[in-house]
Length: 392
Image (cartoon, rainbow, N blue to C red; front, side):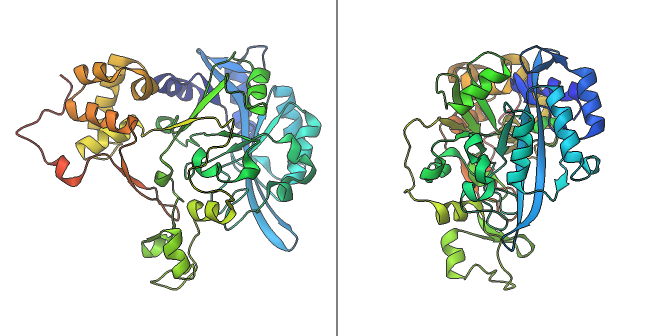
């Protein structure tokens, strides 16, 4: 995950703007300053891929006799601003301990510090439903954003939905209507870049992007690309050590305790959304930014071939398909299906068509375990008369 490989994979995926991550770490910041060229518009560039200065802060603190664990994203328009943020936060805790430093700093105080340094910064609560480390997390968070950020709440205008929820789930809370809902891949390896993404039609300019998010401008902020939320690690309730995955209804009947060992369940995102929702499932608020749910291309190929997505056979076919059609997002969203049908083995082409239509089955993730996507049923995986699974 260095600048060169992030840029390389961004091009493969079809992504024009990447977050740098981790600008609070002194060694990574040195690399960013050495390898990114300023554009003069609040963004930076490396080999035709743009970057926005970003970091994630973990706040663990006590408030009103309760411990909270909140992750927040910070986006900044300049290295000057980043340096000032690092000086201020470095006085609070050790920024060099991790790429995502843990600070005993109230999230409202973090927001105050950041906005006092530069009002054009963006502070975005990260993966807001994740149980253990988030704004609304069942094990860690608040019921209202105002209780978390207090006076700084009005300066926050975007929320990150996380892999285990999608915009439709968030639309059930009227309190979130004013916020832009963004989706990021939270990638810890280059190949996972673009699991989720935000699609804009605007100039590559920090302030233009910021204003599009602040205003929820549907002409400039077009849609988000999402995981099927069931695939996220915390969609359902459960207890990983006992292999128990439970729907909110099942958890309620069990008193939120594991039926095997009796210990408390980790209450997942779906359950937590239902607790706070004031609308029925399916409600779409006025001005909502649309979204598309996708399965990454390597997962599609792996499902067809019934092998792990990290296998060489998946990588080979992935590269061959990209060489023919361009980027991964082009293949998943733009290339006409008939063109794919002509050039890709029939089963992969059919799988892409099914993903585009939302015809997938997902065994929900729970308590830190990813969900399992299935595009074809068991009977459909049986080989038919020596079927060729390579490209024609």
